[in-house]
Amino acid sequence: MQAIVVEELGGPDQLRITQQPTPEPGPGQIRVDIAVAGVNFMDTGARRLGAATGELPFVPGVEGAGRVSALGEGVTEFAVGDRAAWVYAYGSYADQIVLPAADAVPVPDDISDEVAVSLMMQGITAHHFVTEAAGIQPGQVTVVHAAAGGLGQKLTQLIKARGGTVIAVVSSEQKAETARRVGADHTVVSTDDAFVDPVLRLTDGVGVDVVFDGGGETTFRASMNVLRRHGLLLYYGAVIGAVPVVNLRELPHSIKISYPVFRDHIPTREALLRHSRDLFHLVRHDLLDPGIGRRYPLNDAAQAHRDIESRATSGKLLLFP
Image 1 (tube, rainbow, N blue to C red):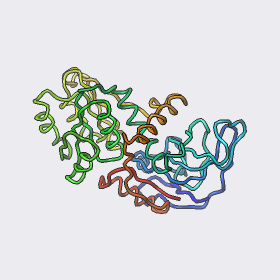
Image 2 (tube, helix red, strand yellow):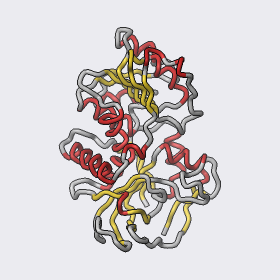
Image 3 (cartoon, helix red, strand yellow):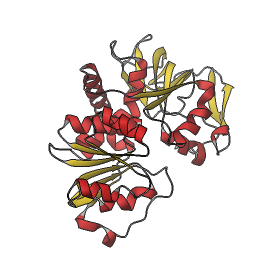
Image 4 (cartoon, rainbow, N blue to C red):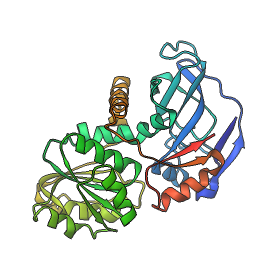
């Protein structure tokens, strides 16, 4: 099979296509012929800093969709020929993958592989952020950073579906138009901390209820300053720059800070199936646009990484074996 392999940590040029042996599933595992893989910003962190497994070499990518081609002993969740999608299974930048059957979800006939992939990492993350980590209620006012990106677009739509207001922070007027298209109530074109004054003006100086901040250390403290009393900052920008260090006495207005890690989004298989079912339902009823962005052949994985790191993209980036 073909796969992208990282042999040494570093820049996008470390993503090299190679021939690998066909993987065979062990007990409880399935092999899937990959139709499409997702590109996430966390993949660039793995390329630079190492995969969660701590091993070199490794095949990056943690999400994809395709058709089951082999079953390991004891697998009852799938049959050969079934369509499946998954998240957080390293080895997805390839044309085949072996992963635990419990980590995959069945894909309905009316959901395409591209849509299914776009709903795995980013969709499940946004769904957990909005329904559980923040628990958005009607009338709440939020700031969504990088609102034109794949995750930002999904956050905006899910917040609006729950009756919230979205102030979208983006880096260009073109991206502002994308954010408005998916339902943002207000847009602020900003880099670093320039969004603070416009957000406070939009809220008459009171601040917002929740900030969804994937901007990293350059926006973290500014995000604290646009929160109202007892507001919530959901921070998920750990792979962008250094992790902020905060003295508790610095926290203004008795705010709360959450760093929601992905495994807490889906602590059980039931949670994985519930999130994915809800997301498929929203797409099916035209309540959620999956926001597909650029498409690349597998051997252009390095370019996909350059593009996502440049912040010049919007929507979900996809790789095709």
